[in-house]
Length: 482
Image 1 (tube, rainbow, N blue to C red):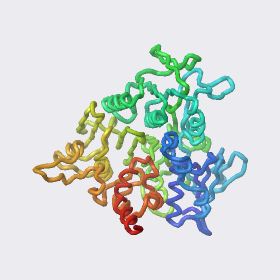
Image 2: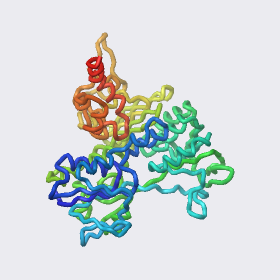
Image 3: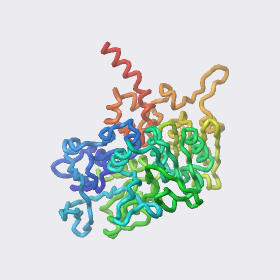
Image 4: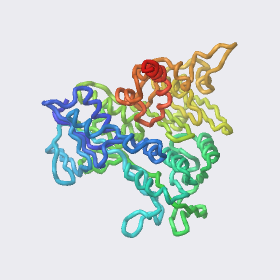
């Protein structure tokens, strides 16, 4: 382990790496860990920003680690500090105030940066956003949008990706009439097929949100948002959720290889063997991800290597979950890419009326990708099979999609994820942190689950299952108090 490890970035990948390094011996008299983040807030869960917007979480509730935690574990945390240069010849990073921090091993966890969609009128002549326009990428963005809600009755969300759907649902829960504008032909087009996108659109319409797909916003005027199909939509608020790219400028200035992201190998090293990259900014095997599970997996691999291990990253474990009230979506792997493989077998069950669409992509009876919309009862078992590359028996894939059945009055041996009490201890519950049902059952409270396993602190999609798994322990505690 290098004597001085410097992590540039204050996001979820950076704090996860710091946590894991601390758990493996952390900082002592011979080595140090430094985290430098440009936001003034302690690291927080960006996935749960929509929960803050919705009002189900307080801003402080999504903090991942406080300043007190960093200090207690000997980690030097510089918040509100921006690294402007990496001087590889001297092994120092230079901050905006011209101070320098030396390193033996440097980790770039710089995340992604928002990009404005090409819509005329978003930015005024002085460089500021139009007063009706709000970005939604940070806690400060969320605070500004919350300040605007009391006088707003309508909102248009520009972008029909995961973030766009989360923001749209949060604003709807707040009582606003919401419309979504997506330039692609279907919602979540980067993650699911058109059939799944159509199910989502129908579900949103039933929830009171109008959706415009295949229509690009081209101009913002005093009359409203002009689409390329000639329609003009007006609202009190316009929220930008489309557009983002890996932050690579720092790496590029340092002379490291960058393409879309910072190029890393299976050890997560860049073209400088003493500089690594993880999270949204990293490009492995030609791909960037933008999701929590691979970022945390990368953090685990790198923590192992920085402490003398030989773990490697294969890029397999990509799991995306939509966290939005009344909408359930999980995507495992890359279904659209996987189904193009000549040896792929696609098994799908769709019911647009009920708002469900479930699809598995298999190769040699092994799940290589999956899409689940509107029904996540089986997500625990499907994720477990996907993650372990389990070879399914003939017909088992159909059973996973249709859920447990009763035969001659007997229960199926495959429990649903909703029936948490039936989940085996080794079934994965939290895809973000790779936590099993058994580890959750070993905890005494939801707070202990967060602290000991990090479950529920990623996308938040596992919270209800974790609460069900904890119910017996909580009931015991209540009975003991009584």
